[in-house]
Length: 208
Image 1 (cartoon, rainbow, N blue to C red):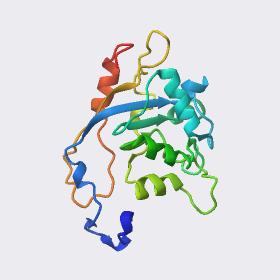
Image 2 (image 1 turned 180 degrees about the vertical axis):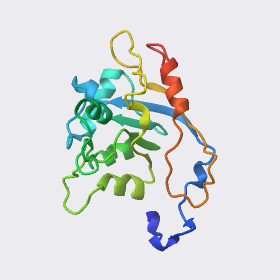
Image 3 (image 1 turned 90 degrees about the vertical axis):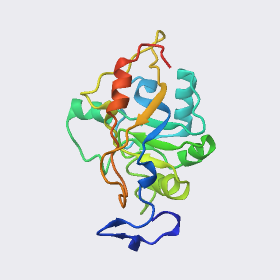
Image 4 (image 1 turned 60 degrees about the horizontal axis):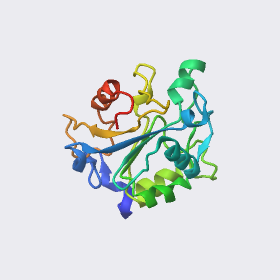
């Protein structure tokens, strides 16, 4: 587990340490949606494509937004668009995502939570015998919360609004709703994102 706690802390009753009880009231902060396929002019990234800090900074320059301390960052790879176009595949073994070197960038920008439409780590990772190195560095060593495979970009969700220059307005306030579930002992949960989807659907181009 994180911070040196033994895996024996997890029993049939749940996690004795490091559960998500502290998130029971939800999170309210600025959310940044980074759309890498749009940056590159493609509908989706091919499986195995690594995203580097240079890509994230190129998106910042294009969108005119800089990721800052306390932000929740969601990175789009186009996973659901590819699935809709070509059908399902083993995304657990082969999917686009962030390269492990992005951990340094996350630390420098002091990102509070990282999410996206896939597992966050590129698969395969490129490192022998380490399947999810970004999880190990950012989640375990740095304490960055992870919110993987979020449903924001599923085909059923309306497209993001575009501003007058054709770039989506991707700076907004994000509310991850608290759950009615009992959180004591839970190690992970997929938070409700309907509030976020409603905000996106109601936004007008240029609203940041």
